[in-house]
Length: 561
Image (cartoon, rainbow, N blue to C red):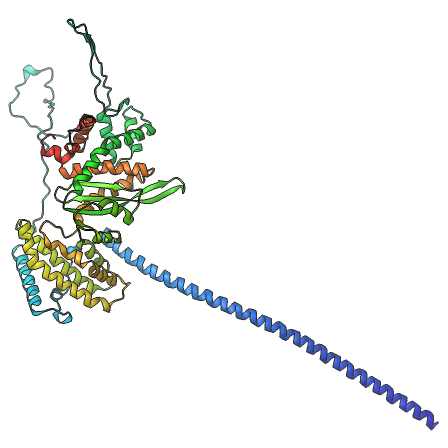
């Protein structure tokens, strides 16, 4: 019995041991399984961490890029605000920058302590300022308000009288006595344009003695084998390149008068007229480039690019002879590069006045060429910086205004070139030297990319060219004269919007040049063009004739027009 109990006890102990062993194994298995899961989770966390770190890095880069973009946009907004303020002043406010003076009159005085100037230079500047102030006191003109006055009608116009009689006079003349005293009034009438057809009949006959049959000669028409007359071509070209009426508008005007002209035909006439003018245009270029003092500028003209199906920006170059005011326009496939400057002035000798466009910088390397710059452009930079640094901008504008006061002195006293040169040397040059030193002293105190920084940099970089106008009384302070010649192009492109191709733009430059010479010579555009078209073929075979004779200025000097 005891033995059996013992055996049973041992069996129970074994079962308990096995059970505990199984439980322990199960617990170990669970722990191992949990460890594996935790290890896997840790591995996933490491990968996730790497992914998150990469995402954070990418987001930081994106944030940095966006911050740079925001900074650029803020700078762009600042620039646009400055442009907007400038345009608002241009449209609604006063643009008399040359008359702008500081609010504090004491700012007109130079601060000699801030710049290094010798006592002799300081004395010259003070004397110049005193003389300018005295001049302004003496020559200030009283402003007289103009009262509108009805202008008299031109005496050269024909008068057509119409007589109006008292009511009841007609048919009962014998019952009335008319007084010699009458009342009259004048009204300006306009006779609308009208078309008519000129039929040229050429007769032929035979001489009785010689039995020779002779036919009347063929008249030289402007365009052979074309029904376009001189008057029609003149009206079309002057209409577009002087009155800025696109050809399609002129077609509509002619249609209302009863004549329909195809646009393609007018386009052919336009190119043919430009070809007729081109030799005279080349002669004009020779004349202008033979002068010792010219001005040059450039302006944009939209050109249709058929490959890109849009308009591109082309450039017309203007060159003006200041003494005669003759001007020509040059087009070179719309380029604004230095290659055009080299092509235009490679053989030129003399003075060229330009703005601050860097393309002209190569002219300094040409032998025989001296460059002048434009005070108007310099002044414009300071005018645009008024909202950025009012004190410095106003001071600079006041100093430039003093230089223009010197020119007004010369104009008021009708000085010749030599007298003007001496006046500039005595008054303007000391002021220019002081202004240059002030610019050099102030430039390190401002931000280089700010409007005032750019204005000071412009003045410093171009000061030599700005100051050279004092060398001769015939030189101008600015390029305003040539900028006035740009205006017809600016008005024209607003109306006809673009040129169809480079060939059309080059032909337009030819016609613009000769029309500009008409304006400079104060010659009626239509009168000159009628004369030109009627006489140009006389120069086709007679090489003893000079095409310069057909230029408006020559015709006026010779009293032909």
